[in-house]
Amino acid sequence: MLLDDQPAYPMSCFFMLKLQGRFNVAIFESALRKALENHPLLTCSVTETNGQFYWQNTGKPPEIVRLPLDEERRFPATKGIDLFCEPSSKITICNVNINSEESQLDGQTNIIFEVHHSASDAAGIARFIEDILCGYASRSGFAAVQREPVELALLSRRGTFGLAWSKILQTLPKQFWGIFRAWTFLMHRVMPLTPQKPSDTSKPSSDYPAILYRDLTVIETQNVREQAKQLGITINDLFLCTAFFAMQHWRTQHVTDGNRGHLRVAVPTNLRTSADTRMPAANIVSMVFLDRKLKKIQRTKSFYQEVHEEMQHIKRCDLGWAFIHGLTLYRCVFGSFRKMTRKDRCWTTATVSNLGRLFADVPLPIREGCVQIDDSLALIGVESSPPVRSWTAMGICAMTYAERMTINFHYDSGVLTRSDAQSILDDITNEVSLPR
Image 1 (cartoon, rainbow, N blue to C red):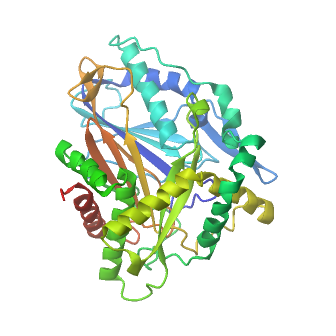
Image 2 (image 1 turned 180 degrees about the vertical axis):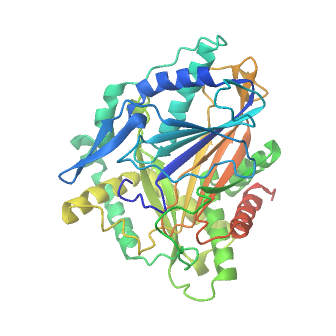
Image 3 (image 1 turned 45 degrees about the vertical axis):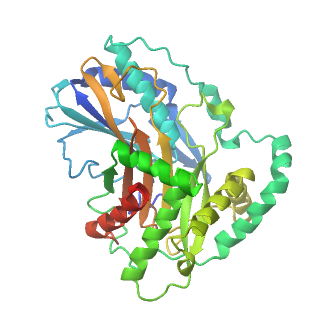
């Protein structure tokens, strides 16, 4: 992910907290500093020596910027994070009051966390944010929360994924399926959503990150669960199928030729084990990939079942490990990942991620489904988005908070207009939330 960080496509993950009430910036900053002590990768930069990369703790908290609240552009424009020059995280506080001397902010406050994906994945960022929320509640005198602390020593084994040689040998027979999938990954011709290339790849688009969203109601969220249940699939499977439908519909409407390849969806896979529950914020994620020819994508129950069975096979055979093993072999053969991160090939058409229920287990009071952080401050909403890389025109991220699902749609505004992106997002939300 460090090598895949390109000027026009920063490898940044985003989390946004929507707070309602009286927000104390000084208390937040105090809770942030304490949380950073337990999540050191979020204050690290990277150095390179003889072709090897090393984390280097800067000892500096992330930059905090104050900007006006804008519902139209909830994620303010950014240029990404240069890990060789600055820490791996940034924070933006948005409120109608942008006076940098003002500590008390009233009304709605949005806090945006930008984290380089090399430093942490969504699960790690969520744990970091939970520590901040609990620290805020404790410092404000609202709730004395005792959280199970993280173990910094666990960071030393994060790259091993808990894979002792005995476990590798046990899973080896199942991993042979991964060899076949790796072959198809390398040999399939993958179609981008649009053959159009961005005009300028020297920097991100002026509106990066271009993220649209749709908040589902409680009823619509229940409809998503019910539809998946009726089809005999998971909610994640439902979003995968819906992504294929939306891409097929948009491509057949806008691209008249060159439809002989595969559409590919990448699915992040959390490789944390029970032994990693106290791991500080870190990236412990793999990827699995689903390929489909355009003409094979059909709104039939058999298509839903086909995707469901493939995902179940991936889980049974632990094929999330196959990508990690494949990368290890690739580096042994070629000495570097640089060839794999070249810009002139489409590896993935879209990314689909379902974060599930967020902050459901935070040990803080719940009022009307929302986490209460102070007597006068509540967490009313959450949004998140992974990065999109070159040729990957869209990333779908679903999450559920306070019994309501939010769908974020991160798109490449260098090749898709806002109208295009809104049309695709409408297709997705209508498909998953309308009762059948």
